Length: 629
Image (cartoon, rainbow, N blue to C red; front, side):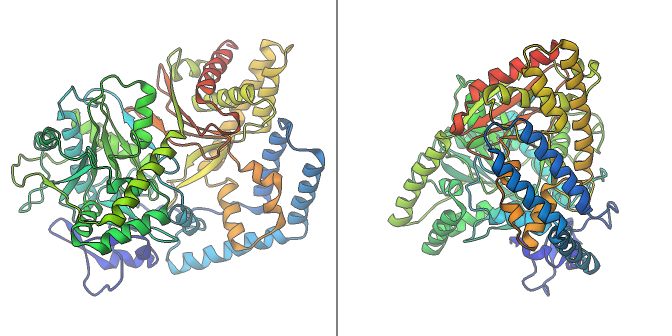
């Protein structure tokens, strides 16, 4: 049985009273009609007492915003002076007339009321954030789902071997069982996203999707050659998860059967715009029981495992493309987390992003890979329960009985998704001249140094356009916290870029500007981590009521992030990538390891963007910065 999540979250802390534990499983009370059961939805009682996300002060918010647009204006060769002056007057009107403060107070009042009720939304931004993800009608590949590519031993299979993939599957499911059985150790952050990591799925709807999860999962679904297969994941009698050898043998069996190859592949639907997919899925489910049963099987699976055809000639750029959106958008089910084994043998994840973020994914991967590698007592967390051998159940191919209309729509879906994939450029830079070890010798933050290199690179390529930058910052230290924006373009970073561009500037002046910019970046990052950014509160204020200030060109440009960046550094990660958020910009997913900095670069080719040129510019900028020391 599947349980929908976001309806349930509206009953807030009552969810914990609508759950009870029996035999290691979480079940919904039969009296809870139309209540969607969310295991651990409010985990504070067992794990930690953490604060509600704070609301930034109005005056401080406007001061932060003004500093950001001052920085933007100093590098902006596109906006005319009259527009800038008129926009400034509207901003002052927003402040001086009290209209802005009224919207802010409305947000505070709503949040206080929800806090007193102990009900959803659990922060001033939560419902708007959910609306953005679940109400967004864009397609998931490239636009929403990011990817991880793993590194280290046991993260790549030899040709025709699936041993490491099978081991990761087993460890991930045993980690999921640990979560389900309330065995997950507290780590100081909000724990509410963890239960959805195994058994969760997104379901399309017209106008808005919903999130569902199956706490009683017992199978996985494997996708190979555009066909789906069901595999038992755990012993029915004991609930124990099978070991890696079991899963490896089943994966190998699927590949050796060589079935599939259908162009009318239902997975293409998950790559469409959400309304189009909702319509197509509805026709498939309503047209025949076979298709409905197969979709239910995928929805309720613990995990989808995607096996790509062998291709040992893949380049690094090809690996990034396949991880982000597949070869042509096929052989995936983007509505669920997918464990992907590339044709090169390398293993990674394509994550459905609506309910979780990088810190949650990193925690899972740390425990899973510690287990796969047989690390002692899990280094930080307790070892997972051992998997067991198993032969029960064979490999069952999922069947479809849809008619000609659905088949034709799936063929059109393939063409559309393939076209979208072809419109996204991916380039991978494994910068290996130095890493955080060298950067720390400069006495600056490694992350801040990378952010400065991105702004410098962008300015070299697009000298008249300011490098308006988004860096994701986790707010998981607050209950149901997700992320806040670090607006990395500051007055100090703009000064650094200008100094680097000045022909006659000295090495000392450039170094001083760089160090100051890095210092300011750390201040901005600390503010964002504490929930003190501008983007989340502005979103909530816009939802509370309109004002011409929010429609000014300056406001819009300040939120048009031509550099969308995120750092998810982790021991077990080799690469991290996602799509750009604007047609004129770049997506920069990066990691800062001791001796190297892997950076995945994406763009849509609009506004003169070019990922290969950006790759070269970033590398050159990092060398320029190193030469300052």
